[in-house]
Image 1 (spheres, rainbow, N blue to C red):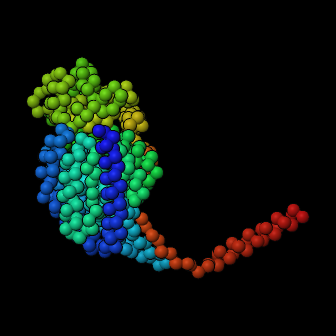
Image 2 (cartoon, rainbow, N blue to C red):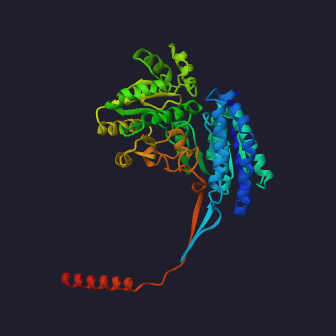
Image 3 (tube, helix red, strand yellow):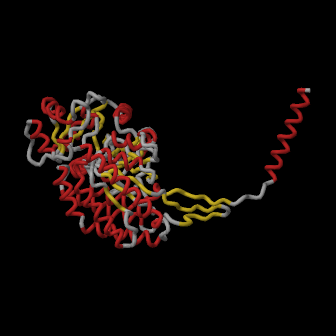
Length: 471
């Protein structure tokens, strides 16, 4: 019975949260060197299992492809471990005259795992949590429960063998909402790290606990007339086909000025972009979203050729991305929204100013605070757009999916991308271990300066003058 499952899930969530709190008391006392050794051991173990876990994730979810999921797993293990190597999170982080800064772990973390990136998210979140000295309990998506649990088991085993206390890494085995809610509400949990759909992120922020959640991605890509058009389109194709579009930072639309439309169409066709006619675009649009407005899971992480087949039309062999002409953004315009598959909207505008306005319109509808990509060699236009576009990641001349997560840029390598206040998120960072610690400041009293006494004398004099006038 479903009711029994709910009870089992709630009981398990309480037990795992309690065990994580007990482990936290031990983990919080480990020195930086020990935490670093645990992180290295977890990364090495996960790297060894990267391909196996990727294949399991594709089989269970039907999203993406094993080669790119393997690359994601290696990114979440090797790249994240390299990025945190040498990072100080424990003890005195900084000393200046009269002020010390001490790193303190936030404590037990509840981590929500999405079905689009289940195994890589487990490794990434576990590494940043353990580096910060925090224990972590995962709540898997029901459609990715087995691969999420297996990934968590790999991490937990490696962490414990390297000296982490038992219970430092755990995962719910009954993937129902009741268990997730119980975990988020557990008194032992100090922070929720939420990656998932809008409903799950809202639940995290409504739990009464501090939370780091992410909003929807819906990033436009602007190809400026100063760009190398072929290189720009190759970047977009590489990004949009990576794991078949399941990275939230990937481009969702291309915006160009009218003078560039012909070149983009011609070069795009050469690179495997298929520009749909109105009938084909209409047929595919009916598949992208459910009547409720929710993204149709049947199209998530599927190749362009499979999507065309599902919509009932044929495309040339080697087609990488499907493109639909669009001019408006809003709830009745499916191509103007986030599509977790290799499908793009194509906006053609009359001027650079109208491109800027359209990009803001698209992001205001969905995706504020997330990601924007520009392809240009003109630094002036890059600077102008950077000051106006409401995003946390403004990417220049790089594939957005890879640049946004920090694989091809100097951003911290992360699979949780904060969207800032404009996107309804508590952080605009690529979330790192530094987001999972608090800073205790040790501050010495300072000798009173003469200026302070002078200011006090001035206030006394002014008060006396006012009293004289009143009398």
